Amino acid sequence: MQSLNPEWRAEVERVFHGAPFIQSLGAQLIEAAPGYCLSRIPLDQHHLQQDGYVHAGVQATLADHTAGTAAASLLPPGHIVLTAEFKINLLRAAKGSVLMAEARVLKPGRMLTIAETEVYIEGDRQRLVAKATVTLANVER
Image 1: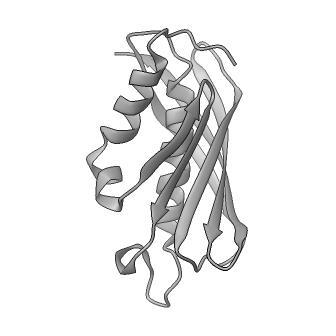
Image 2: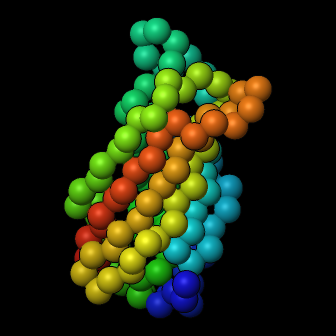
C-alpha cells in the first residue's frame, strides 16, 4: 500500500507510543509499513484475569491499537484515526509469555478505513487466539 504521508514512519511512532494507556500495558512496536503493523506485549501478572489467562481487554486493546497504527500510516498529514467500531472474536484461551498482534488495512478510504488484526500468544508455540475487524474514522486534526 502507498502512504499519503511522506513522514508516515514518524506518525506511526507518534500514534503507537503516544497513548499513555498503551504505554501502561508495556506494548511494543515491532514492525510497521504503510497499511501494516506488528506489535507485542511481554506478559506479566497485571495482564491476566482471575484464572490466569490473558484478559480479553488486553487482547482487544492491543488488536485495536495495532489496527489504528496500521491505518494511521496511510493517512495524509494533518489527519488522525479514531476507532468507530470494532469486533473481536476470542478464539481460544490465551496463556503464554508474549501477546502479539499483526494488523493489515483491508480497505483504506477517504472517511473510513477497515483493518483486520490477528492476535497470537507465544509460549511453547505460537497460537492464534483472537481476530478483530476494526473500522476507523479518518478525521482532520
